[in-house]
Amino acid sequence: MDHGTPSGSSTAESSPATTPTSASGGRTSSGGGGGGAEAGSSVASAVGNASTSGASSSGGVSAAGGAAGGGAGGSGGGGGEDNPRKIKHQSPIPERKNLSKEKEAERSECKVKHYSPQAYKFFMEQHIENVLKSYSQRNFRIKQLESEMSKLDLPEETKIEMRKLLCQKESNYIRLKRAKMDKSMFAKIKTIGVGAFGEVTLVKKIDTTNHLYAMKTLRKADVLKRNQVAHVKAERDILAEADNEWVVKLYYSFQDKDNLYFVMDYIPGGDLMSLLIKKGIFEEDLARFYIAELTCAIDSVHKMGFIHRDIKPDNVLIDRKGHIKLTDFGLCTGFRWTHDSKYYQKNDHARQDSMEAWSKFGPDIPPPLERRKFREKNRAKAHSIVGTPNYIAPEVLMRSGYTQLCDWWSVGVILYEMLVGQPPFLANTAEETQIKVINWRQTLRIPVDAHLTPEAMDIILRLCKNEDERIGRNVDEIKSHPFFRTIDFTKDLRSQQALYEPKIKYPTDTSNFDPIDPGRLQDSSSSCDENGHGNLDEVCDSGKPFHHGFFEFTFRRFFDDECDHKITLDSSEGQAEAIYV
Image (cartoon, rainbow, N blue to C red):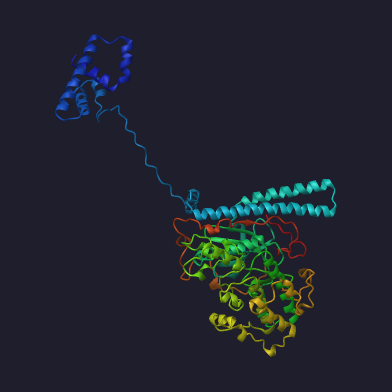
């Protein structure tokens, strides 16, 4: 009985689930019940003794269980560390998998990134603007189709099929715009140019068999380091919006972690500067032809609401038929707040348009009414010094503000160089050149031994003149000048026979471009400074994983099945069908 009492005690304490079963079975003896009572008094006395001595009640219960643990039942009521029925559970420590850099990058891409309110506003405004543009362009294509069908007087069944075809192309275009592009979709053939921020390479799209493109790659780190985000944004905007034959066509623009990419027409004839070096001096008829086409090209840019600001022979390309196209709109401006470099500078969250030069007022910003008057007076002027010194207009250098007329100054300088053989303000340094340009009244002289015709001399002097006296406010002032008496601007100049056609031996021939110094060739994926170090992570703030100036950069041109005289690997004429998918 002495062993039964603690046994009953231990059963009641450690296994409460068995107690109701014993009671319901009616098999518990009175001795067992007495044992339970004794056990209760024993536990109570043990607890009382433990509390008197300052021990905890749980310790008293454990001591009682341990003292009564001699029998089989007592072994279940101990509750101590020696209890064989107690199972210890311990979760295994998870092993960290060794992921590759690609997987780590993919995992970090999935993490939620935190952007500033400024970045959010920039994205929303640009995104909504692009959505509205897409809507208007889609409506324009519908109206264009209806207009063409009405001219052809097509039967109603054919019109319905044409509308269905356009609807299908629109759906495919929207689907393709959502697809992510990367540089692996293009195979590099040869580098044809190297600049301060990247390179231009001749490439072929992998999923098309014979189409060649020029891919311009810009390193983001260099763009950010030199505060060129606004210029890149302006170039992307004008190339995406331009849809005329005088501007190099942009087919795709996309980006990855380190670089920005422009995929454009490949123009195999080289640039006008290479032709100037080759010929030295142009005959007047050849100069007249190129200046006439350059006039039409600049006028088309001005009609879009842009100023090129960097018109020079290097940025005038010659296509396979001898006609020109404008390129390199890196310094172009459209008087938009996204084209203003001040907007992207650190610690400057206020929008500032490129023509609102409050710096001339000093540190104190004028009151709103005065600012409004200033905007109204100068709303069509820019105030940043850009351009190449030999071709830059004096009003740009003097920061007096300039309009579209600054591009016509550059045309006069180019014509001078074509007919004389060197720029009018040539000097040993850029500073000396700028001084000559500012003092153009004393330095602009046309040498007598150049034997220019009176008409050529007159148009040069009327283009290279003070802004308020310069011709070009209306392009007809230039087109109607006697220098262009043999040019009929009412006809399509590009459909006429060019006076010079570059020699192209085979489709991938790049001999019309200057050879690239091997020392200047760099991996376009690396972002290096002058000392050969630096990367995008060092340039960007840790709290800003992606510069908001690159939002909404991606572009894909709508399908166009018309013959575009694109350079193809098939050199036969008339077989160059443009495929933009």
